[in-house]
Image 1 (cartoon, rainbow, N blue to C red):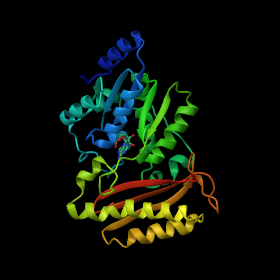
Image 2 (image 1 turned 90 degrees about the vertical axis):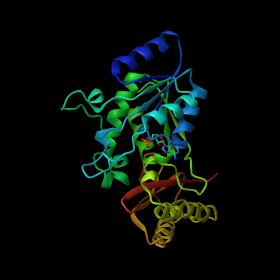
Image 3 (image 1 turned 120 degrees about the vertical axis):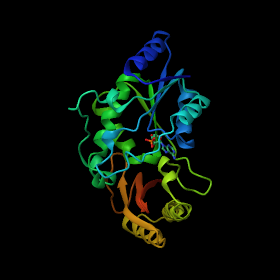
Image 4 (image 1 turned 30 degrees about the vertical axis):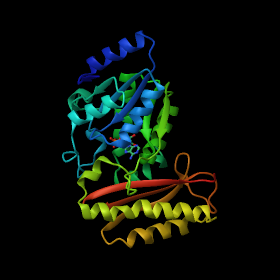
Length: 284
Ligand code: AMP
């Protein structure tokens, strides 16, 4: 496996792979890789001849008071895991390499899909995501790009972008990987104290209970959200940002009764750490 840091080096690796007729899988990450990321790299390895993993803490998707500086950076361990899961290249550029001029060109998906849920408290977040993912798509020229359902809103935003900008690639969305105790794996879990980690288990428990409520026939979104909110509030360390349901695809307003496929998404702070989690509510 090769570790490269510059656009020129990545372009060269991609050109060689293309000249050999290899299919390319891209796994964009911010590093501090865990089993969630590993599942994406593994899938990319199974479905493509050549796998590029990017490790880049993208500054443009962080708000002014967010955790850009504190975000864990563990490139050496990331390379080991990426290699073990079958990556051919790790691309770890500097911010200056990805944003060579102060004035940037933005790729921005408009509409509710970027405005609701995380878009409300993180107004520039998705613009940063779509811009950096566009740059990565242009550099790696993947046949398939791998993302996690953990970031369900990001998935809906990227689907819109790929469709609207006619990107010639397939988005592959992988299920949420959880700790044995149910907590969704996240690079930000390392911020949690042992006490906060235990408290955060309320998220997966509450979402699981909502899934069961739905399975027994509940179709009133307000009732499901109220039950999840009450359940999360029973944990004194939890500070709710949102508990909401939107229609899929594209996060449309939920109907009453709920029909089709809907996303129940939560964002909750434990201490200073903001965690997100979700389940899809749909008939089997
Ligand atoms: P990040 O490094 O947090 O930007 O995540 C990079 C990619 O890994 C994104 O597509 C995430 O959705 C995905 N990912 C992060 N955590 C998980 C998880 N627990 N299960 C599955 N995919 C994940």
